[in-house]
Length: 512
Image (cartoon, rainbow, N blue to C red; front, side):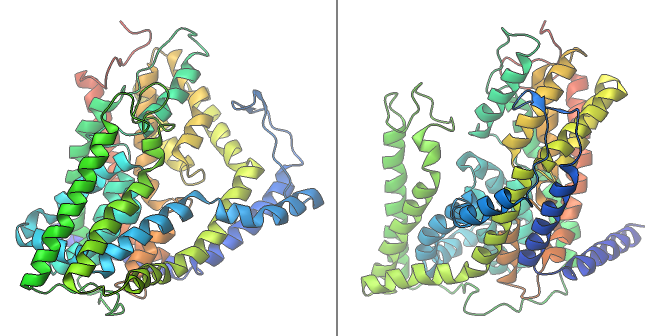
């Protein structure tokens, strides 16, 4: 029975991969979607909608992007749309430092030492755990943990695409699961509190109102990702040949005494850098804190400096290892490693150009906002029991996530509808927020609007040249469906037991 089940799952995923890989190149898909948005904006701009945009307090209006003024504005902003595309800078700056560390041999040497003491059976849960914790550093997981997971799996004799899938599931699929509070917590809380004050002007929502549930969810996400990676994804990949460019695939050989010494000094430089960073962050008057002395808010310089910190923490040991091991003999060698890292990102840069134009047009048109608002109003009109309503919010959020990629942007739209609506049903803002976060996280790994999705395709192509959108979708779809069902069930069970959601949080409104 189990074999038959596995065969059925494998065949279904194979069909997804075949269909997905018949799609045009991702860059062309984004361009086609851009044209579709232009046409749809022109059509729907002719209609009047009753849905109220919570950002303006007025009826939502679809903006026609095919008018002369709109096209002129688009042309004048095309360069800044591309250069202002947030993931582009995050990826390129981080990869400059990581590239030095990788091509100097530091990462390969460090992984070799780490793998010597890591049991092969525990590799998957360790990768997922690191991926989950990486949320604390905002988007660091996408540019650091996911590609390194492929390197580690390949070095252990396992399929590198399975490692990438496991890390992607932890970083993006488990975005709302973390033992460590992150900057996303106060960001979402700020929207939740403002939405709740529509009903109760005096209400206060704690930034850590979901922390306990998020921590417990980490174990669930690790377990699901572990099982699916080892039992579903990797067995399906056993016949997929690793045919990437040998020069781009890291080699792992025994370290000689010179390399061992270089690794020791390079690691020491990284540790020293971390110690100095902590020394700067700890004081209450640290310049890396925000005006209120908070370290984890989005306005805190520490949170805004995550990418430069990653750059420096990998640049330093990369340089030290390069010179001490003999990989670098001049500064030109160091610059060459940065150049090589950028060459590997050329395909992503092209895709990012079209992706940035599409996302900008989608936001300007207000089509995504209309879809989110109409879906929320439809759910509200059903007047379902509380638990069913929570399930509806989870699944509606997962669906909306396919069209509105930013977590904060979605909650800015949906929060002012969901939170007051459920408060009328005696459901607390804390519970409403966590339902939103479960739905948002579960479908992150299959949403075409996730800016880092094309980047993960590039990571896979490093090992398997034929990797396309369908390949990645077929790998991540089992994670998405399983997380959506199991995480929602876990939330209902957690609620039924009455375990605390977080700090100063409750399930009902008004709080007892």
